[in-house]
Structure formats: structure tokens, C-alpha cells
Image (cartoon, rainbow, N blue to C red; front, side, top):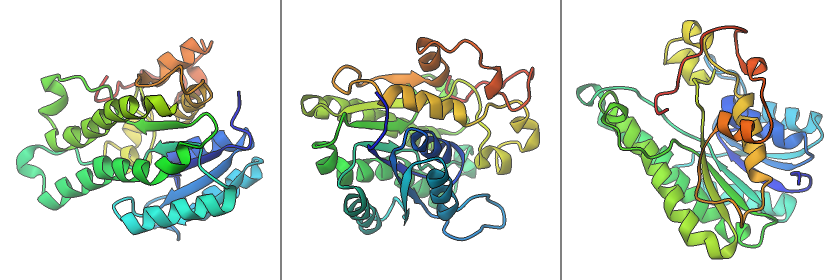
Length: 272
């Protein structure tokens, strides 16, 4: 099974993991709905909605771009309408958009707390709700959430409880959605990296070049995405997947091409 002719709605698709997922879908000839906030060049962040749309088209996919803040019900609903008008429906939803602040309680401003919960948990709920009527009639429908396995380990919470709570909120939505949508044949799964991924957040907020050098490329998550959403939706749902494990199961044994620096000692992710 491939994604050829299927419509993939990707939030946070202007850069990093979201962009990599959009381009992986494009290589199958998918229709990609590029959802993001950056519609003009940013002084500190590479990539715009238009850039990803162009790259999708260059790889053989079709694309439309939508300027969306996933906190806005009106903007999300408008993007879903655009997707349906362009491609006739939605088959796959990728809840990738996320906000991060790895701060302890005393150092976490409430506006930052609110941002993380509104983007991460509320945004995931909103996008899934808005896409649901079309997923119900989609071809092999999948929802994939970029969130970690919900393990209640104190070390996952103590250094940055506000962020962890928002990401685990996304994971709990996976549990609930998977059970709720099972009879409709809509798969809902989570995907998370085993190692740090080289993204703009890592480069600008979480250690810079020193950490990027010991990270993996976003393409490892994109390839794992593809392996998950091309499985029959009724046979694989409610799972919390780790990128490397998914690819090993799919037959991948050489992970060196995914390393930003060949031979480097990789950094493990916060929640693995």
C-alpha cells in the first residue's frame, strides 16, 4: 500500500519533522495539505508554507498551503474546507504542531504554559475533531500524533512538568480516540523518536549545534510515519510507536544514514 492519491493533512509542515513527513508523502504521489504559521521568510527559522508546497510538487505530489494557528477553530475549519475543495476529502491526519519550553515550574510563565496546552493538547483535539467527518469516509484512514508513550515516570515530569503534561495530554488523546474511532475503522496511533531529532527547536532553544551534531535527521520519523499509515487501519491502532522500532520491524537495519554526524554518539530523547 502507498499514499498515492490519498490526502494527507500535516500540521506544523513548514520545517522539521512536519516538512519531512510532507515530503515523504509526496514521493508516493500523495495530496498534501501543508498547514503552518510561517507564510513569509522568518529571520531565525528556515522554511515557509510556500517552500514546502513547492518541494511537495517537485517530488510528484500535489499540495495546497494553509496559514493556520492550530489554536484557532476558525482557521482549522477553513483549512479542512480548503483540503476538501482541493482534493475531495482527507485520509490521513498528522498532528505534529507543537510548542515547547523545557522550564521548571518557577521559571514557566503562565502565557507559555497556556501556549503549550493550547497548541499541543487542544490543537490536537481540534484538528482531529475538524477532520473527523472526512476521515470517517476516507481511504484507509489514519490519525498519527507526534507524542510520547504515556509512562508515569517522575524523571519525565520533574525537569519540565508543564511541557510534559501538554505532550502526555496528546498521548491520552491517542488512547481515547483509538477506542472511540475503532468501530469506524479509523486508526489512531502515536509516534515518537528514540533519539533527539535535528529540528529548529533543538537548534534554537535546546542546545544548538552541539546537540544537533548528536541528533538524527527528521527523515527517520518521516519513514516511520510512512510505515505506519500504509498499514491497514483496522489492524493497527492505539499503539505508541518509536521510530527506530517501527523501521526495524519494516526491515531497516542500517540507521547510520539518519545520523546528522556519521559515527557520532547519539543523544536519547527526553521521554525514551
